[in-house]
Image (cartoon, rainbow, N blue to C red; front, top):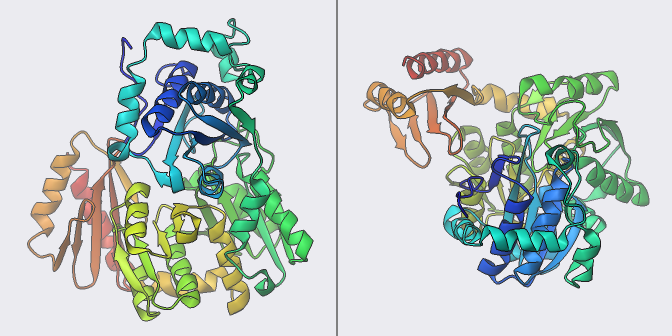
Length: 486
């Protein structure tokens, strides 16, 4: 290539459409994936963005030319690819998704056999290097071979029109459309005993993303066995134009529709997902958003209840609540660096039953150590029924015991200088210094973690205390002022 491919990131592929990521780049990635991994079988899927299908088909053409047979699962969430990769015993899986990024972006998440993640130092850089070696002429020739309409322009691409002719993919004998949705639904529901579920009303906001179809499959299983759960569906129909905005419930401004529906329907709790539903976010019966940190503690408790001395993985941003629950319940807490590749690697090493991040990523040993946005709410529903309590009551005591600031982001010109200022002020008096990820300083009654983003010019702060909200708030403001004093 005359120019390097710039959409490869530390853990995945993500880029601006027709500038960093195009059908031509997708073809290169598919071919390099198959050749580098020597993959003979690969599952692919895509979220509901209009550009996901054209990119997926070009990716499939590259995979076929690289020597792989492609199983196309259609519109999927990322975790459906994780599930199918292991369930079907194939050599790899690729989800085309930009998750919560703007509409003019897209990307890919890649795994190898067994749904082992592929990141920069475990194959992603090698795939990039190989993808850049194919000549422009050779790539153009192969795309022309699979092409059904050379006149498709950029606007048509953004509206979901593909150059690739599916009939030509099928004619190769190496492309097959496959459905794993029912098998997937059975698997995620197996994490609970549905006999424990008493009548529940749940608001479910798919954000017009990929979660709606998966929820329908779960609802169908519930109906078959008489599980008394009623779903109030919000923004349920998949729509790649995202008429209600890009689904990202991590942003406070994107939570109102879920909260209002919970209150209006007198629901027991609410769920909202991001675009590829690998994260789920929960709301209590009053429509209040529950920080992901406290859900980690709930799920840790759920697994320790099912498995004595279970190992639980957690990230170092905020963890006093999680550690307290795990230790008190007889489990083993294990700290890991933040990020899905690190969490999954540590879970495999420890054979941990569950891992959780405050960012609402939840990982499960029996889900190929991968993250799921469907399993968490199922476990929470079971907890509410077996303990005969509300979500608010379950987390209230934990929030009071270990109040936290939530993650506070600052865009800075010089993040390293900010870290140096913080170290100079706090390091001498810190009782514990933790460099697992960024800098973590602990004091008798409070602690904080400060880390640079791997993907953005941002520095991220988290503060927590032992049952002292005013102290947590005071130290949070103190740190923000220092960090932003450029």
